[in-house]
Image 1: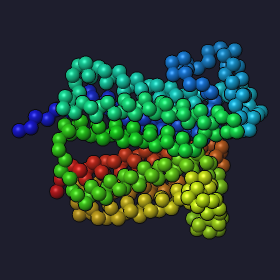
Image 2: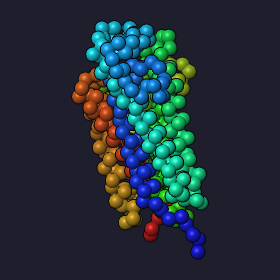
Image 3: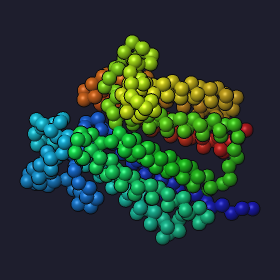
Image 4: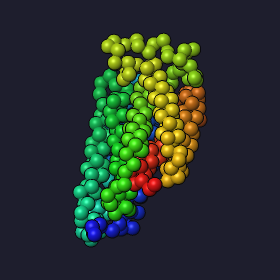
Length: 346
């Protein structure tokens, strides 16, 4: 009989806590973007930056640094110190959560390694989140740095999408690692057809999240604030305005918003088919219902967010944050479905 490493409850709780922290930073990151706060801290100081300015003079010094970047003159020329503090704390909270996540993974990892509580046969997978979290910190500064350059008033939406995508990858790795650990890293009992369908579904959810990041990064949600049409047409007139044609998917506001909408329709339709195809499996039924429920909720939120219009209206910010937070649950449920298809019970 194969001697599998037994799961450790403390390790399971640790991974869950880090997962919750990653979910929190995704939402705080969304709030930072929606309040236009991401460029308020113009330096990368992982240690020194853990504390906010502690005196009036220090606050003035930080404000003066912000006044030197293009965003201040273009978008906040009338901002006072109180307004600067408001956006500063959004970005500071985002970076502080990043530091907390790094420590929340690193310190218990060292402790569990020294105490030999991590499985001997499957130790290496526990290194992956540590590497990805460190990489995410570098990606975060790479993203912010793009917005500090001459002629830029926002961060690069390509780098924003990379940063958000990595956050979801870290969340997914943590989820899968925890499930594997709780299951003792036992060999899987795979239902081949369910595995393929749920894997494709998970990939589609991730692609849709990245498409949402492009909408956010290019502020494409500020236009075409109607549904189901876009300026009176299903496909907006300006969809292919850029040349070469492929560039529209990444730079054209009309195309970016349409693609996000259309991918949502495709994703929802595919999810309906996947869940219908598994309707006879009592084992998969509950997760299928859960997925359809959260997708229906997410589509409704997306429409409401779009119709709310103004990106800086408090009601819009609340809806947009809820939409991003709900995307986390769509992602987790899709992962749960993929996991169950690999541990199939007939």
